[in-house]
Amino acid sequence: MTERTARDRALGWLARREYAREELAARLRRSGYSSEDVERTLSELADAGLQSDDRYAESRIRARFNQGYGPIRIRLELQRFEVDESIIRRHLGSDEFDWFLSARKVLLKKYPRPPGEWKDKARRLRYLASRGFDAEQTEHAMDGYQPE
Image 1 (cartoon, rainbow, N blue to C red):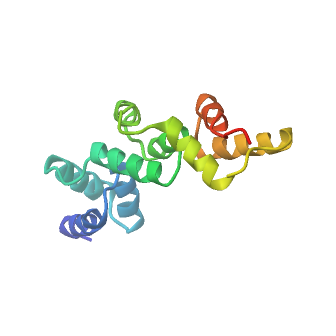
Image 2: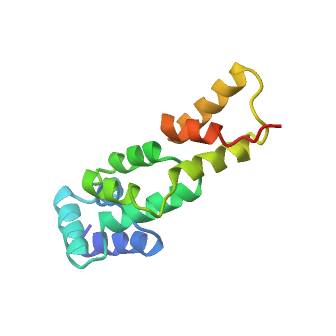
């Protein structure tokens, strides 16, 4: 396999969506390209501005936020693809995302009625934690139920 082919394949993937550098590297290696070809190709793409972990993080955070996931879970996903922590912090801390409101919306969509006994409250707290919201965000969401 030639370097040109690796570049073509990577460009094809990047034409569909943003990819983290490590995610692209793994896909190219699985496709049978040598480590040298992969590194050279990814460096060329990054230098040309065609691949950017910064754009990937921004895109991924926005998509997962819109799907109702919290910052803890999103951070773990980005770390899995070795996105730099400073990039993650900058985008997760953006004013664009209201994690408290998001937690409340996610909770009220799944559980529109107030919790009954303590088991119901615990179930809802576990649900929000599994979506990646922290304790402060889940407590804020639980306060969103209006008294009946």
